[in-house]
Length: 310
Image (tube, rainbow, N blue to C red; front, side, top):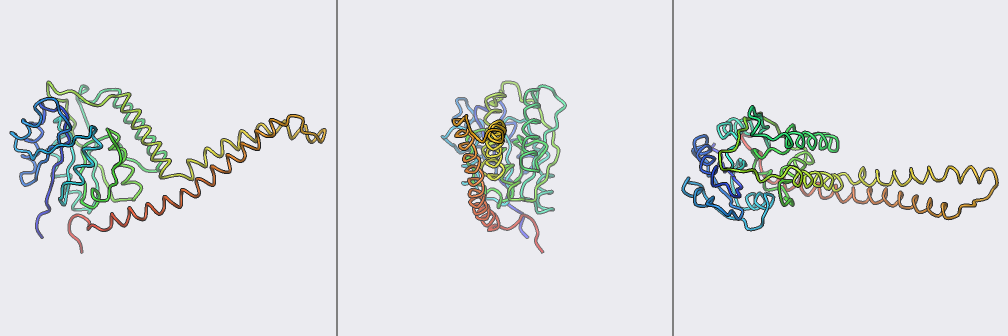
């Protein structure tokens, strides 16, 4: 069998200070891999430095990491894809072990779970936010990863070509994780070192703004992928409020045979109708979601698994 082709994908925005070190690290770890740097409207010399370091440099004009990842997955053909950030924080030397695990076990994604001994490399707010969002994803979808926001991942070809990326920004990692969980793909995690940024390089991730966007993405994906539970919960709230409001009316009716507070009765009727409509909406959308899931699964199965096959 011929060796699998490997593509290293590095989305970049203003990484002049770190991109050369990142490219050199992956070149040393994977000498036969093609290294792509996708520039996202950088204002500094990221493009020039990446070209000088020997990377294949391309551009994506739509701003946001999600747009860059969507473009990379669409444009690049390879058997195995390695995605990392261009800030030299991820351990390029771990890449061969990640690839070997993917091939040996015929997996579709491996997440490089970040382990850092340097406080400056992983801000406290980011640690807390990552733990919160990871726990929420596990509660909503039943399974999760220990580090859903890690940007260091290895993919099979059938993952990248079946992934319908819709995210715009840093919530792309969450969407990738949910895609793997929903299609029940074989995945794994491997702990990898995580380093502080080189001097002159600054993080583009906003703890609060991007954390809020990731949280909204999780809730939106839950609404899309779990409509029965999402709309069923809303319907249950309406029915519960209706039941609470109906108790005094029922007591009065049992005692007098009259319904003196007619506006309250109308409100209760409206809440019951809204609760029933939400329940039926969830059931109808669940049928649609199952159809979409089958289409995504067929697209996924159109490509062979990585590694050897019996």
